[in-house]
Length: 84
Ligand SMILES: [Zn+2]
Image (cartoon, rainbow, N blue to C red):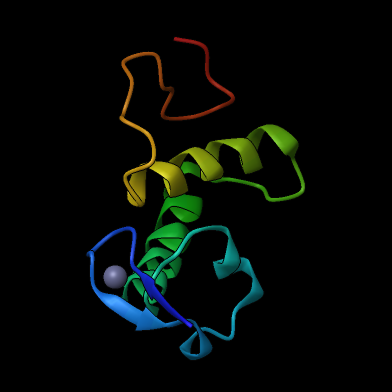
């Protein structure tokens, strides 16, 4: 089945995607790989710990912003542990 990538707007065949996590958004393999790289960078930079719900939530927010589902907000905190 052909889908339209949320990020770049290209059509792609969903059979190309073998990562079950990619099911959340229609994303072509290029953009998905780009997101995965970006996610690792974010996790390192923000020292996100995927065993902590708050940190997983923070990463999901980045994911939604990456795919354009959410606009960056002023209240968004760089480090979920830190109160500004
Ligand atoms: Zn794409």
